[in-house]
Image 1 (tube, rainbow, N blue to C red):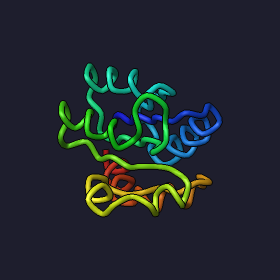
Image 2: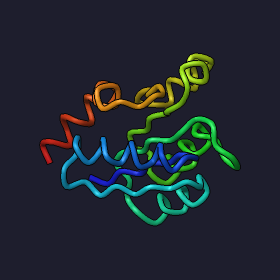
Image 3: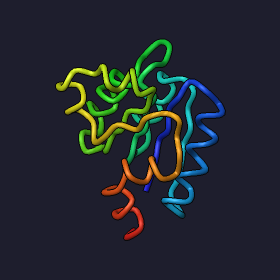
Length: 124
């Protein structure tokens, strides 16, 4: 399984990478602080699971998900952000994601949000 994690904060990326390593042993996890570089990575590499922060500079999480889906329509994509930012998303944008993951990130919250992907990742 190939996982792409995109966020504007190094602490966020480190925390999320640690949680994902526990949930998906053996997965290849790629981190990116720049959404444009993440899009380039997804253009050149298969991505099974994408976790993107909603509020980033240059390109927000929704724009990144749409960009990646142009090349990889089957990617499971999740948005992360503050409860207020996620709550304010219009329904049509929420429907473009497999789920929403609120901050602060905890292993339990990430696992609950990714429950379908977690089950699939453990089978592989």
